[in-house]
Amino acid sequence: MGIELIGACVYCASVLFGVDMPLRPGLAGELGFSYSTLARKYDSATAQKDVSDVTPKFVLVGMGNNRQPAGDLGAGTPAWQWQVLLALAPSHDEQARRANTDNPQITATGTGRYENFAGIGRIPIGQRDSVEVAIERRDDIATDTVNVGLSDHSISEQRTISAERLDFAAGWRHRWPNFEASAAFRYVNARGGVDEAGSSNDGSGNLFGAELEARWRRDRWTLVLHAERVAGSLSVQQASLPDFQQNQLKADASLAALRWSVGYSWPRNDLVLAMTYDREELPFSPLAVLGTESVAYDAGFRPDSSVKEIFWDLSYRHAFAERLRVRASLRMAWGNETMTLVDTHGGPSRTLAVKRDGDFGGGLSNFLGSPELTFAITAELFLGGGSN
Image 1 (cartoon, helix red, strand yellow):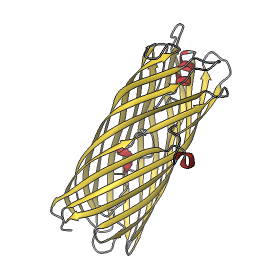
Image 2: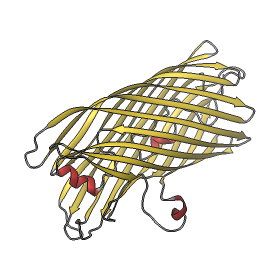
Image 3: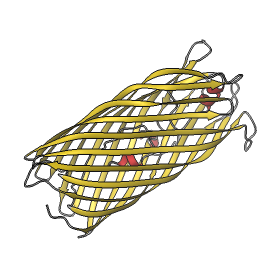
Image 4: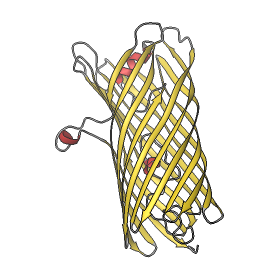
């Protein structure tokens, strides 16, 4: 499983069948931890900066077993495999929009929890083929205290932010010498929303699609190209002051990603560099709600989010002993989001140009910006077995 299981982004790409580094045949356990961020920033026309982020700190535990294909068939994925992973994290929310002559300050802080898990199974069909099934769930729920226009350390209201993505995939993989290709059916159940004292905006529903992957291996090099997309219609429920009249509608949604990676292996070491282009079209709020959005929801607007983001992943693994390998992974992401606020009372819509980054300032961030960051350390302990 990729780094997305221990990342802050719930709706980003989910590479269910991905294997980026060579797997040792046999039974192995995995233990790790990570720090991750998802950050959003909006600069209004009145030069009022609004920033928000969520930062989970994961503990990862897992177990798996695999058997490799015969000879030089394929390019790194097992012919037979089972694997289960559990990632749990407390999370912290932080949002701030300082007051100016046109608008009051809005601040929020809160805590939440991520409860993620994943499982994968492969069954060989002859020497060259495998049937693959996978399931993955990413979930976050948080409660924030919000201050609108009051003095520091005052509380106006509470809000609850929820986000969940449940993936299921079933596919077929065929192998040639040093090459393999796969295709799979994808189903995603997506849920999310923001519930406040003055409004509620929630959406849920089913998305359907497919994923394709091609892998090529030569000597110590491995190249991978992966594409996935799901789309469908979600049910949206909206209500706000003064009467909390329920408005229900159907809205289009889609999740898509294109990923390539290149890996190099030598005795006791493995190195992988990957890039993912990710797109999310969702009729509800993502995580890290902005103060500007919160006030708009209470005024009767509903969200429609469109995100384009690029992730760069770098992973390095070293074998410290025959049965122990340790891996360090770094992810940096930059992106833009168009948040359309639709007036449910029939007035004109508003559009917010939101940056998917933080606002830390100074030093390297003056050159790179402030990317969303995920850093992880995992250790793999080989327990036995391993015959093909």
